[in-house]
Length: 483
Ligand code: HEM
Image: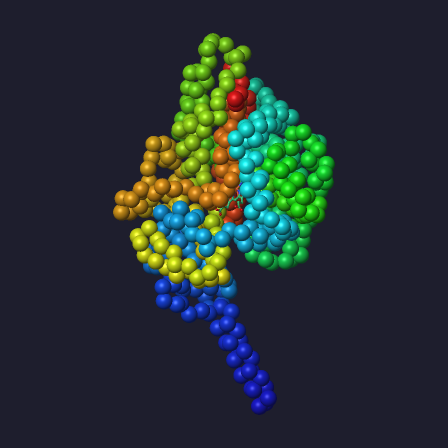
């Protein structure tokens, strides 16, 4: 009996010691307040249940900067709506270890020289390279529509909206990325859907073997042509070609290169995800649908030399596409509502970080620090009725904090580092314009998509389930071309 009690006492002491070593920490002078949480798993549960509500609640009591704990990991959250630039410029806040973690845990590869690669490949989504890629995309959207949809002026066809977007947008993004080939892009899309369910768990480092469905989906996703075969294609995207060649020069293996290709497919998959939401919100809101059709019709009318003929194609420039006010506002509003992104950095050395009110805060070496854009995007002090979709919210609008100071970056759906932002937005806008100019859409009775908040942390949050729509080709429309 005495031995048993002695062992129990030893175990208790060991557990208490482990608790203080792994989970507990003493706040040092200057460090942000640590949010109250469960003594073992910290704030994980509240964060998972509804991250935005939880962070708004913390902001009310703790202010514009505080630290939360997810199990044994401390994460300082910056809620200052003016922090975007200072956060981006703070040299100790490092993205490299974060992308390494995603690459290794989710896609099983490590880049030998990530900075060189990102710099080199990023040049290929600008200037003429971007223009060529956009032209390929325009062409591929048209081909996907002809090949994968039922184009009928007299009868409605029925589909899931997400499936509709997969057959058109995902297909064209895929073909633009890898070059045109006989490939079942719908299978790729389904595998990506399954794999993304486990993204957050994998990213955090849980072993893939725990998720047999993820393993099976990954087996499908890595069924790609070899890197040598891919770069022989004439129409593979320049950033993919450049990245593959650089990786080969660095002696990375074929399987590492295939893992890296999946990262590019993943970033394009985000463009597809947001494409779905833009169309869905337009369908949910007749006033938005009416306004955008009016904008398209006005543009087509203004650009046609003969308004009695529908034979003539109408050409618009990329610049014009980027500057359509209703489309731009709908896109921004869609990002505001559907973005789930974390702008997270590893802290390289103890850092005094200054907020916009001049206050200085000590951020601890080895922690993580983050801006969580969805919490800013839904801040009721900045956006009136933040959970409502308002299609014209961003037309000629400026946004201010509660003291009246203007917020320079009210929407940060691409973080501060994404080199593909302009390219993705052009593709997105073209897709929406092309589809609305060519088809009429309706939800089936009672159908409405809802955001699935368990995917918080993903760049774009998917819907809980697909929604059923019907579509038919419009009569008397002019064909649009992008110069
Ligand atoms: C709607 C589509 C997209 C969304 C929502 C998106 C979002 C993001 C976000 C949130 C980040 C992290 C940035 C940060 O933490 O500051 C990022 C990084 C990145 N994105 Fe995008 N992205 C999209 C499309 C693209 C495309 C089409 C490309 C292709 C070139 C791309 C390439 C990258 C790269 C290479 C990085 C890593 C940058 C680095 O490590 O410095 N993205 N993206």
